[in-house]
Structure formats: C-alpha cells, structure tokens
Amino acid sequence: MDNRPVTNFSGYIGAHPEVTMLPSGVVKITFSVATNYTTIDSQTGNTSEQVQWNTCTCIGEYAKTLSHYLKSGTFVVIQGRVLLNQWVDKVTQEKRSRTVIGIDSCTFVETVKRTPQYQAEESEQPAPQPKATRAPAAKKAPVQKPQTPVYAHDLDDDLPF
Image (cartoon, rainbow, N blue to C red):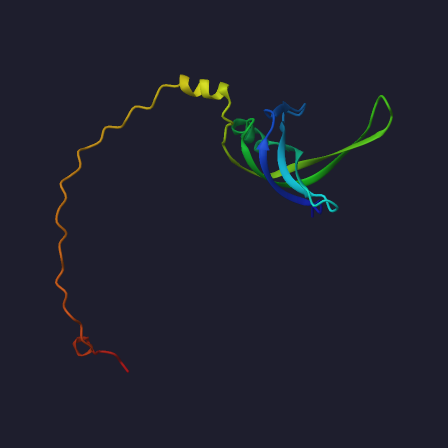
C-alpha cells in the first residue's frame, strides 16, 4: 500500500513541459503548475496574493499521452502523490531536497493566453466557411387536441381489491 500523501490542485502550466526519454526507453514529462493563494497578515489584517510553483512529473505511457496535449498556458487539475527528492550538492556537499508531485491523474482544459503572438497565429488561419443551411420550413399551425374531462366512474374498474 502506498502511504505517501495525496494532493489535488489546479492551475496553469508555466513553461512548455520538458519531455525526456530515459535510458530504458520510457518517456518522462516534467512541468510546473502555478497555484495562487491569499495570505492574511495577522497583525495588520492586510491580504496579499501569493504564487506557488509546483513541479509535476509523470513517467510511462501516461507521460507520453500528456506530452501530446499539454503546453504552456494550459489549465490543469492534478491529482498526485507528494514525493521528496533528496541529494547531496556536488559543489557545497550540502544536503538538498525538493518536493515533486508524481501525477496519478491530470485533467486539462486547453486555454491559451491571448498574447500578440497567439493572436497573429490565430489570424493567419483561414476563416471557417459558413455551412450551407436550408431555408426554414413554413410554420404549421399547432394541432389542438379536444379537452374532454375524465371522471372516476369512466375509469376501468378491473382492480383486484
């Protein structure tokens, strides 16, 4: 049983995801997701907006699938496990660590920031051609059903009780 902490969060992908091939031939994808949160100063009561960058990684077939769809500016909802990478710095010989989210599930909605470059690319695409439509059919007058009252003694009385 995997007892590492599970986390869920959503945000926008920062830079384009980094896709690498491991020596074993397995695909690995790594990207950062920005999440916003508000802090309140307990002494002054002032609020401030903070941004936290979460490094996310995935390995295997799921990473290969994600690499086809994710890009900078994509809004994602991540569910994953909190991993702690630890190492010793080769220069300073200090112990270092970094938290990474191992992706279990990634739901994404494609949203692209409206930058001038994106708008230029969008305007270069040919305009969609209008679909041929048929002329609207003439409206028929609604057929009115005669209203006849229903009485209890008119109902079929074949009930066994």
